[in-house]
Length: 477
Image (cartoon, rainbow, N blue to C red):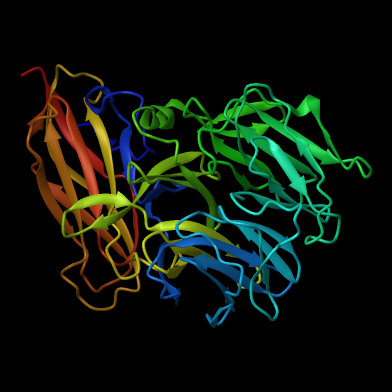
């Protein structure tokens, strides 16, 4: 009477689910932890409502003043740790619906999102435009600070203009140009603490540095023969750049080599992206509960994927629409980690809501988080033998459940042999009041040659689940 686990692994999309055995093919809103348990991703709740009727397009934490600068609609806001929100919009007005980039100069933050360069004072005052005639006045998508120089794209592909050192509003008309031929510059940025400005083109990546006199010179030995599939794909995380390349591989830069991710099986994600439109992909860095994620929205496809750097694992994140019973693009659009507050803030893509993400929150701003994992068709090593499933059993860890609640359930679903076969379902009830751990047992689940399993949890609790164990007999009958 063999006993084997129903496998918990990350998503794998490099083969049809009907052909995958003993691995998971799909993971939504979940983490397979270091111990192999299924855990829900952190939830979020409202931190502030900007009341703009438009999505949040930018969030930036300013360490000097311990404030967050936010953009939404045609307005700029300043937020304090106690959620006090101040509209600081003056003559510097952001473009509605465009993602903002930021350059931090201690008491002032400069930002751009397809208009001119906007100066946002963090202490007192309202926003103004950088009006120097030599500064770019429209179409500015990227701003950055390198060694006290404010840099901005010029409107001409590959050309970067910069202000005088230490005086971001004084421009002498100086510029430099990324040198890769026949390559369209899409994005440039400076990572926190980095001494390089990096230009991502459609087919190449260049790095420049400040030599103290020129002032910017190329580092030819750091040229990378790979590009970015979208202007907002590159994100600086933990001292390196992460991006989706022109071949739809998630990569990070290792010296001059783009390393494809996940390192354990990069095609598990690449295959998922192959059939999707990614040219408008928007990446962001999210840190929560000790994990770092590269999270990417695909607005045209209304899908979101998240790569966990610490676990080398990816999954799909989503907002569960209960009315239509379908996954939609995750609601977060931009994010920042306020180190002085020890809080992760995310901006809603459809409203002016700013959320606080927390491992102690188990809903999506009071809406259901649907955590699910689906396996391939498991044959237990022989697709010709018939397996008689006597029972499955396992354990769910739940905390802070002090009263009986009949809505607290985990659904166990299965179907046999063919993708067209009907799903069957049993529910594990979690509303018992005694203790934190719940051991469950489901008997008599029929016979099969190959079986696909799906575990679904929508309960509003701190949910962790060990891989279910299946006890079965088998024969050639």
